Image 1: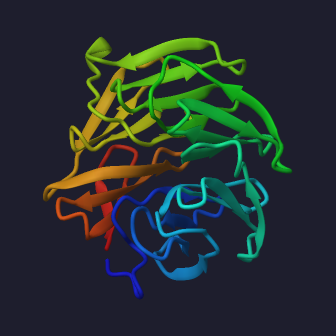
Image 2: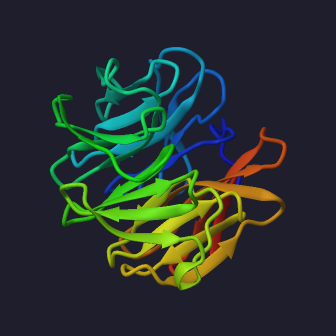
Length: 266
């Protein structure tokens, strides 16, 4: 399906709100911004105001509809109102290189700090409340479940880590364990059953893991595309951003809970 005034760029991340609207970050493209699309793919709005020209490498939406974008050009996270008004810049002197974002059930913001090999946690008002350091290098995608457990894409070591609310490691998935092999995992999302979806551009596939870390399915990207971002609905329907080898074209693939391609937006 073609999108009028297509906002798709290489390296984009993705998030969903409770109405099923889709938020796409501009990734490595110029003029960094976030685009809001309706569930049917209609362009509804664009969020601008990022510093520099290094792209937006993470996007999240909280329970109030506020939108967050990780701006690598400004080394901060920009918070927008649902209407697109710039509210604040978070973590400008506390984050080395912001990457993946996640929001928990209390609207606390989790920021993967790719440069600091850490996860920074901010209150809804933007105050740094915790720094989580663990055995991960170049942290990328993040997800938080209803119990406050944190899932981290350990990009350089090819695995997903599960941590409790205090930051203690509970599990490590990947590196061939339970049949899970991850090359360079980037983004993570959870469905309503606690299943974990992981994009792995190294293996050119979207992988689905059970809550206890067993491989349930792997869905290869077609046509030499690399999966980058993923967002899951509670029923397990997924939306994945995919880049072509040329790094210039991208698309969004919507899949059913069983992995069947439903719609391709490009």
